[in-house]
Every structure is written in structure tokens, then in C-alpha cells.
Length: 383
Image 1 (cartoon, rainbow, N blue to C red):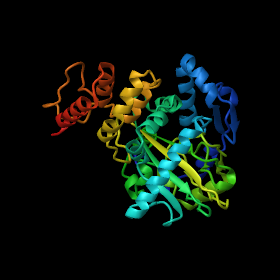
Image 2 (image 1 turned 60 degrees about the vertical axis):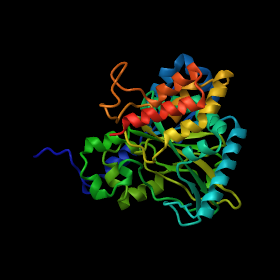
Image 3 (image 1 turned 90 degrees about the vertical axis):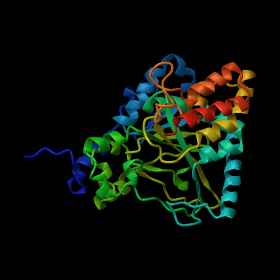
Image 4 (image 1 turned 120 degrees about the vertical axis):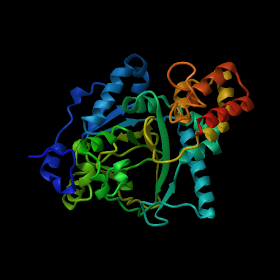
């Protein structure tokens, strides 16, 4: 028999899939967890805040295990405890939606026109609208804790707001970026080990900006489905969709809760059955610093806009989580670059935006000098 690393949808095996999805979480394997509900590992945000410094790597190892070889899902209660900050963001979201509706660019590729409110690249748009609010939101140390667990010390944040209005319909089950956004025939061209690897390059997340009772249709999730190797080829098949519809679970969330799962997990938004209730989530897709994220984020524009606020907070000792916000806002990788014009000076790689921001803050550069140096770095990278 000839060995092959390639597979097709015809090789999908529903029996193997069912066997994986019928596993159960053992609470004893997750000592930092607050609870296990429907195989979803629930953490308490306040408890993680208290534990994170002393037990950071142990917590991160536990989160990684949950996402990779566990059920593939974690939830963190009260992850964003400042509801005033969430309300500020909701107001900004509404402003952006109104502006984009008037301009005619508002669109949701995943629902009928008008059914949902969707803001693409809410990450950058909020940064340009309200620097202080952006800094306070994305400096959340628990967000950094989860991202680092899956992706290491540096990562790329993208975000999209989804507002599901009354009557909003459920999505078909699917997997997400990267290969979840490719056609089945194209997926089959990639070796199966590479298909498996891609799920470790991104992390899916959602921040509840409203309460999300079951009737409002929080995300439908199929625990353990991320473990199925052929999943990127199988999720469109009828028998897999039927199994998902029969066995998917939902996690009710409260405002400020966070939900994170492997992009390879079979999932889909649920039906909003409530009248006069909008389900609001800031969807996070965090990518490895080594890969291409789904959305183009102009880090230069973001940094130029938020630097005056960063500097003021830094000089007033108000920037408690400096590393977290710089990692979120800046490009933390030296490559790709032009090594003729941007050679390594110290170490093996050229300066990153991340390093530049830290230098600027510690040396007290004014905004004009910082923007000039930022533009110089960008120019050096051009071929």
C-alpha cells in the first residue's frame, strides 16, 4: 500500500469522529478550573488574577492542554470586570455601525443583509476612535495569559464585532481560519499534517458585551471535535452536520465573560429567540506572530494614534500592563523585511515596532519623534 499524506472528504469517518466527541473531561486534570459544564472548562477571572503571577506557566500549560487535547473550549467568568469600559466600547461600536451604514460599507458576509450588525476590524477602528478605551481594553492581563498559552509571547490581534438581533438565525457548523475559509478541493491539496498544524496558528475568542442567555443563541460548540484530523475536509458533509446539530452544546455567558476555543472546533452561532434583545460579542481572532492574520491591521496608524495616551499613562504610572498593550498594538516580529536596508544591528534580527515603543516610552520621546522613527522602520522594510 502506497503511503500518502493527502486525504479527501471521502476518507472522512463519522464513527471515528463520534468516538472522539464522546469523551468527557476529568475535573481532576484541571486543578485551576472553577467548574466543568458540558465539557467546557470554566475559569474564574478573579481567581486567575490572584494566581497568575505565582502559577503562570502552570495555568498556561493547563489552558493549552484544554484547547489542544481536551474539549477544545475554555470560558473565563468576569474576564472583563469593568462594565463601564465595555459600555464605552458598545457606544463606539454603535457610532461605527451608524457611520458605516450611512457610507454603505456595512456588511455581514455570514448572514442575510440587515439580520446582524457586523464591524470588520473593530480592533483598529476602536483604536482610532478612542485611544484610552482601546488601551484599557486590550491591556487585559487575562487576555495576554490565554494568548500566550496558545501562541507564545508575541501574537497578532484582530477583532470583529457581531451583533445578532432578534430573529438572527443559527450558522451552519464550520471550522475557522485558515483552512476553514478554503474550498474543500483546495483543502485536499494540503498535506494532512499541515492541516492539523494550522489550528495551532490561531485562537478563536469572544468577549460578551451583553449577557448571553441560552435563548439569545450563544455559540454552538462541539467539544473534542478539534481532535479530528480530517475535520477541515469533513465539516460540510451531511452526516457530520447532523451529528453536530444533535450534540452541540452552548455556554450561557454574562457581560464581561470570555470564551476561547480552537479554530478547528466545529462551531456556529445560535438562533436569537429573544425579542428586543441584541446579543453583542467582540469576536477575537488572535494569530501567531509567524503567520498571516485574516485581516490587515495598520499597526503604524494605531501606534501613532495611541502613543500620546500611552506616554501620558506611562509617565503617570498608570500603565500597569505595559507589555500586554504593546504586544496587542504593535507588530512584534522583525520579518519580512529588506535585509539590505534593515540589517540586524543587535542580535540576529532587526528592530521591531514592539521594541521601538518600549524604547520611546522609557526615553520619553514626544509623539513627533516617535512617529518619525516608526516611519523610518517601515521605510527600511520596503523592498
